[in-house]
Each structure stands twice: as structure tokens, then as C-alpha cells.
Length: 192
Image (spheres, rainbow, N blue to C red):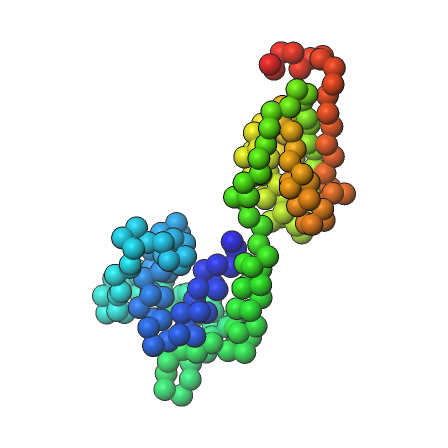
């Protein structure tokens, strides 16, 4: 989820007593490792805590840049004692990110797709402002067994599960998606 790292930073700073070591550990690794650590899924079960003094110069620079960006965005600030705290804007951002995470688009929904005797073509045009929904739709179609012909055109001998169609309605994507069933053979014989 986009914003997960920001959410974890805000949560770590809010719990400052133990937060900074975990905070540095999460954000001074590569993206995939930091994502896994942020979700609490480190390879060894627990992450080794690090202090600022343990960091090399590049890591210290990255850490400082990260704090500077959050400060510039008004999400964190330093208090009188020199320690970081989350601002009112930061708390609002955290609340917004938690809400987005809660109602997030799951690509792991276990739709039970069944093979269909007829080919289905799914064509969609999801606006750029709804990018997350478009990505969800592409991933879901792939997991159902559809093959991509173009970025927004998928084909497959797959029956569309009712749960998937309900999610299209829930996400207000029905007007953006067209589904065609091919009942007669034509040039598609070459595909099978």
C-alpha cells in the first residue's frame, strides 16, 4: 500500500520510547526489506535494533533526508528537548493512512474462478485518478487466469465469480469495465 512507510514512521515516532531504533532499522534498508520490516515480517522474526551511532555515513544521510522530508511536509517536528514528535497534521495523515489501509484494495482475494466454455474479453478504461483500482483490476484478472492482450484488454476462458463482480460494483468500476463473451469460434481457434 502506498503510504505504508509513512504510516509506520508516524506510528514509530508516536511511540518514541522504543520507536527510533525500529524506525532506523526499517528505513535504512532496501525497499522490499523495509516493507517487510514495517509489516513486522522480518526474516528472522525480530529485527536487530540499531542506534544512530551504528550507521555509516550514507545511512545517516538517508535517515536525515527522511526526517527532513517529513518535517517539510509538516508531519513531524522537534520539541523543546530536541526529540521528534508527531504533529497534528501528522496525526491526521496517520488517521487517513490507517483508514485507507483498512478499506484497501486486496489483490489476494481468493475468488474461485472456474473454467468457462466460452472466451471472455474484459476491456476497461479506469481514470488515472483511480490508479490503485486499475492496478487492483489488472492483478485480479491475472490471478483469475486471464491473459493480457494490451494494458487494458484481457482474454480468457474463465467464468467471472460473483464476488469479483460485486467488488467491481463496490469500487464503482462497473461503468469503466466492459465484459464480452464470445460464443462462436472465429480467429480465436488459433489461440486454443
